[in-house]
Length: 385
Image 1 (cartoon, rainbow, N blue to C red):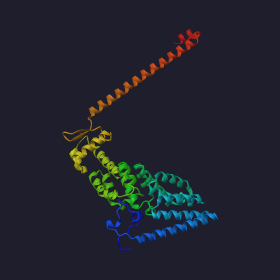
Image 2 (image 1 turned 120 degrees about the vertical axis):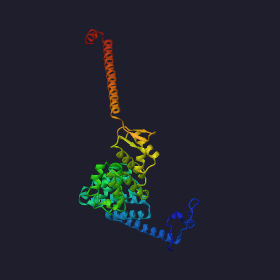
Image 3 (image 1 turned 30 degrees about the horizontal axis):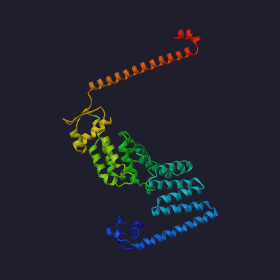
Image 4 (image 1 turned 90 degrees about the horizontal axis):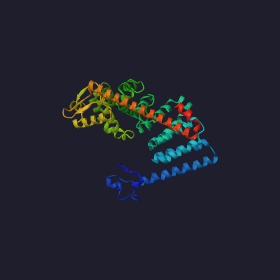
């Protein structure tokens, strides 16, 4: 092979190329057919050896050997990028586990492959299975931390951001790069801090992230995020959002955050706007736009959305002519509460009248039916009424 880039995908070979998939040479890449043929031959030979070893182990009924070969086949397919087949082989090895430690190892491998394949339901199931190995959880803190990290990723995939943030924040500080096939130490800090900004209140951020002995040290791995958290806690929203914007190119390439990053950034921006407005009865939309580094029209549209969703405190209203947003006055608040109370009392009265009329009508129908069936009771029923 030459020093030029080598295309290793079988779909790029001349025999399988199509009009929709241009040949690598047309894109400036050197296609080394000999290298590809050599690797395919080597992989086929390795797979034949593993299958032969598996048959021998199955004939001799040695469980440990069968389990070991299935795991090797899983690693082989994973290295080739055939993750579904790798997952199938690893699952097969679980039938030949003889103790809790082996079962926990298999569960952890299935969890890793499930995360790579985005099979989060599968991941959740095997996290539960692994948690039942209580002796392994109590004796191996690293194993327990890996399960907790995987559980946090499942919560993130389901958009349970607050739950995921607290799980990332509670991970043991001893878990650094031991699980780097799924998460690195920087990833844990990044995910926990960003999800915390989007879903936790200021007090929880301070206690769970900034002052936490488990998580505080991790934030040093991502200085922009650490500074953004500190700015948010100090109500310095513009530098907070500015630092997060500088991280956006990196976050959009993250395999776990990419599909959530726009939602998370919007949640963080909305939380900053709400927190900014809480101390005020009246605020200028122009000043708010400058504070948050937004266009005035964008800020006004954001305020309209937040007010419509009922998330802004004090039931504020927008004066588009003066470009102001103001909360209700004390007199208007009292009037509104009085009207709401009158409406509730009226509704309770109507409900009472309707239920009373229903009870009287039901009693009348009952008496009529008794009189029709047995005229002897006519006088007694009349007296009871």
